Length: 287
Image 1 (cartoon, one colour):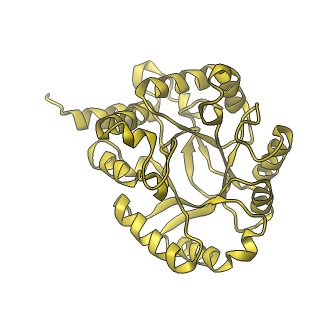
Image 2 (image 1 turned 90 degrees about the vertical axis):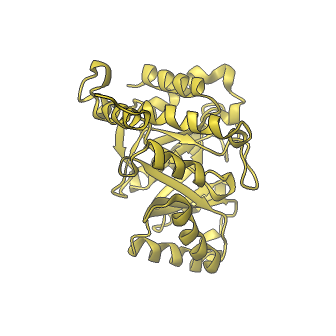
């Protein structure tokens, strides 16, 4: 029977997710810490693979390092991640990555299998309302799984942005998004996020060497453990310190794979080799 490339990729990805590709055990995806293991994202009701693909490496003004490498490279990296069982894709308006994921869903991804996370820089209710509608159109999806307020840097964000929070809560009630939360770039903002009952999901910077983090490692770890205990979905970023920890990647991946308070981690890839390496490293160190 003839099979085209798109159908082959869908079959391959489905087989990986089901645990049957390459003779793997059907229980493979449930093993703790594996890159492709599926786990709940806090108490959101959303499931995610432990490894997520970030799309914002050195990103600004709707462009990233991966975009600068060309459309073909971007699509190849998405395809490799999906083909290896990654089902969490980390986007943002400022990354310019919405259109690439939409094209991937048109070509080889099954929307029902993946968790889409994106972020808004909007700081007023009108902008965030418009962003939610635009993001859904750009992604060609009825519902965004996770929408985050991007790059919060002030402790008092809940006092400054109550109307924005209301807009996102209403969008969740309407089924336009499934969960809301924050991406933090400040210790005070992260503390507030953990204390707030509004926070469904938190995306925080953490690695064993305190590179590009918002506080001492032990303090950040304790705070994220508290978030996890509250039922907040905890996502780790900057696991490799924006690439500055390449010489320590072994211990970085070991930490991430064994950190029980992390529901998932997002790593930005610039090549298919980097996807392969991250999966191999995480799976080798998984508990």
